[in-house]
Length: 251
Ligand code: 13P
Image (cartoon, rainbow, N blue to C red; front, side, top):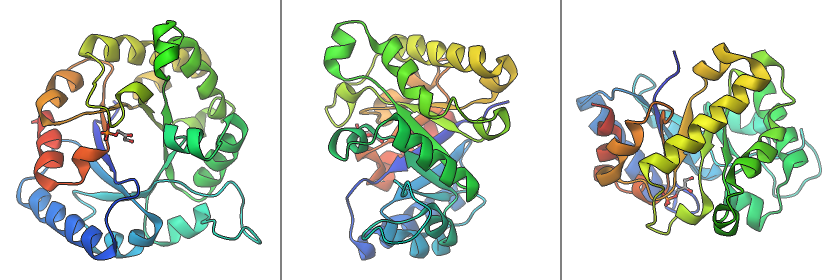
């Protein structure tokens, strides 16, 4: 059966010292009170090696927020999937709407990144989701279907390693959360697309996370939906009390 997962996305927050302190505090809290789900923190590149060293892998895993679409070489400023993996990170967020919007990452670039992540044994947390105008035009189902093209070229074996995250752009950092009904409806649609492509067994085993203004006060009702298998958390992942409150929604 698929796993329940709560993953934090720190985005461009926390300097190295602050990040280490946050990871330590979270690790202590989770060792003391074991989570009922998998917990991942996705941090800026510069934090990865230090944070991977601190966490107890029995309760907490580490991921990056991005990786390069090239193997290695003259790509100044880029960080490869192999480099990410060498820090001890096990996951990588790919296709976040902020990367799609501000850094022009498209279906083809994200297909390359996904392949390189998998080749380096990183599990992609692959993000999809529509913007407000697309939701208002009731186009969300076709938008997520088009975005999934980046991962639908994978072999069934490789696709089985992917975690999906549905993040409606209109809910990210806005305080406006999808209703549990909206989340369930589109998560079920996403699972049906996976089933049509890879069959029902792989679809049933794929974790689909919800992201967008998820907090301790709404996590339980979102995660209670049959097709919502946890969350990808931005702002509320930056304080242990809030993040732990969301993790505890699975208790
Ligand atoms: P917020 O939880 O801050 O809305 O961000 C969600 C997100 O983008 C996680 O990747």
